[in-house]
Amino acid sequence: MKRIIQQMVKQKVNQLTTTELIQYGKQYGFTLTKAEAEKILKYIRSKSLDPFKEEDRLKLLKKIAQITDDQTAKKAHKLFKDMIKQYGMEDMF
Image (cartoon, rainbow, N blue to C red; front, top):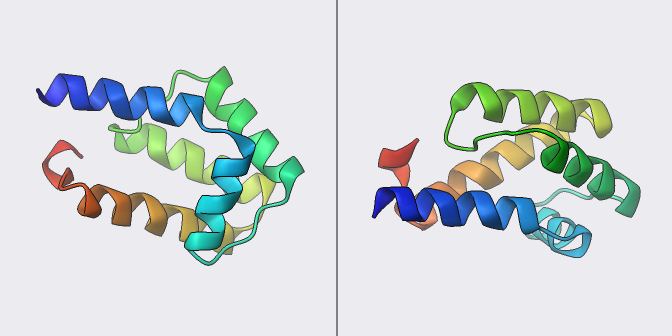
């Protein structure tokens, strides 16, 4: 079951749209421009990042900081951690 959930999460991350990413940002108190969201999604899709591996999450957060700023990357990290808790998936990370 754990493997299925991990696969679903990876699929959702890879299928995020620019609009969805911008909306998530608004929900969690940070703003992304359309260009920033597109760059972030392009990066996610061009790499084989595993959101369940801390090393890969840190790579993504560094890239988000490069595209936007450190504050936005910190808020994105908080969003990810909150979503993990919300869905009861702490033991997977």
